[in-house]
Each structure stands twice: as C-alpha cells, then as structure tokens.
Length: 320
Image (cartoon, rainbow, N blue to C red; front, top):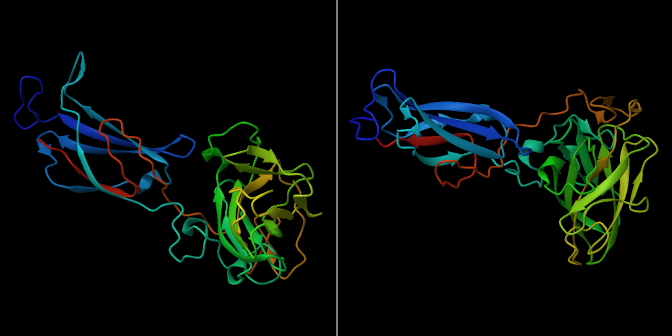
C-alpha cells in the first residue's frame, strides 16, 4: 500500500483497506458489525490500535472480512491479512464473587421467588438467576430438603445453544435451568423446589436434557407442579434419575426446564412483597434485574487462523 508492486497498487487519496467484524449470537443470528479502516488513502495503520467491539453485544462467534478499493476481475489485489492481539471480553459464565451464579445472571435484592418476605440473595438455601431465554427469573431451593447439603451452582441456559434438536420442546419460555447439588451420601434421593417468576399453564411439562439420553419429558413422580403453577418439585437420585453425570458421586447435575406456554393469568401474590415480572414476588419494587452483556466466545475466523476468547476490544495492526 505504501509503494505498490506488480500486483497491488500504491494507495492514493480515495483508496481504502477495510476490516469488517461481525458478531453472531448462539443461534447464528447477526448481532451487529464494526468497520475498521486499516488504510484510508495514504493514512495507513502502522501501530497497535485498540478497537472497541462492545457494540456487538453478547456474541458466540466473530467473523472477520477484509475488503479493499483495489480490486480486479479476480478479486481483491491488496494482500488480505492483518494482525490481532489481546482480544478481551467477559465470559457469560464468569463468577467474580464465587457464589455459584454467573455474574451476568445475578438477580437483585427485590427478587423473592419463594415469597417468604426475605430477598432470595440473602438466603443460603435458594439460588436464583435471570433467565437468558425469556424475560424472567428462576430459582432452586433446598430449604427443608433432606439429603441436600449444598446448592453448588446454578445457571440459565438458552435451549437454542444445544445442537440436539430431536424431541426438543417447541416452547421453553424460561429456558433451561442447570444446577449442581451436593448430597449427603452417594446415591441419595433428594427433592428440591424450582420457583418460577411466571406461572406455568395447566398444559406445561418439565423437560430434561443430557448428552447421553437427549431431550425427554419428566414423569409426574419426578416433576410435580404446584396448583398455582409457580413452582415444581423435582425428585432426583444421585447417579440415576435426574442426574446428568450418571455417577453415584455425591453430586447431582440437573439441566431441565419448563416446556409449554406460561399461564395467561398468573396468580396474584398474597405475601409481603408486591407482584411483578409475572407471578413472582418482588420486594419493594418490581424490577427484575437486567441481564448484562457478556461474551462466551468461540471465534470463526474467515481470513486468518486466530484463537482467542472474549469480545470487548482487540488491537489491530496492518503491515504495509
């Protein structure tokens, strides 16, 4: 671009060499693009330059495309390469406070899904998340449960991120809830309660998914809905029914979720909190807590093989 050669021209005013970065979400849908001119006329980027990609939002993959004003019948004459370093971002599973909940899914102190008048974030026996599918909250409680010593972790999963489509429910309004329990003894049978911010309809079912069996509906003796549709009691067995790892190891891993429509008329709350976000109870205000932007990155590189993680900014350098 500085001097030209037998193949590519020397750049002059009006010439350009552009990098276009496209973000895609977990479903492969484009979230946005960012254009960066590695050369604009005789102004050529020769030093490392930070590029902010935060406008792409939450992404699963990035695509990089180079284009130039110097083209011919066979395509672009400008050598198609660039250098990249320091691709930074925040994982959607990042848990800075080590409470077992992804930071991007943390609920605020207004949320009281079990409707006991105490914020769920202040109770060690319940963990709640903002759902990544839909616009609600969901939580799992081991209060008064036998054989459960700890809820280790919990997170919301978008069903669209699971490539296995066989027998997948058409509608999962609150997505999947994945939680990990520590039980008192290997092989223990436990019951836990999952609370919903919006009531399930009478026709709703509870579905599970794991890599071995795939999608399957839970029978009523394994998943029992409350009369108001605001909760479901799950009966799980370490190493067997409801345990995705299939091992009697004192740990139960359960990815499952509500399948089917929500109730069109969620029940009102008679507790101390005011209702909001559907049928769930909220304390003081009905704010649900927003899910912040985050990036779980696996890059799709079209021009240059680069592996990295994150998405907020990167340094770019073009050799002239």
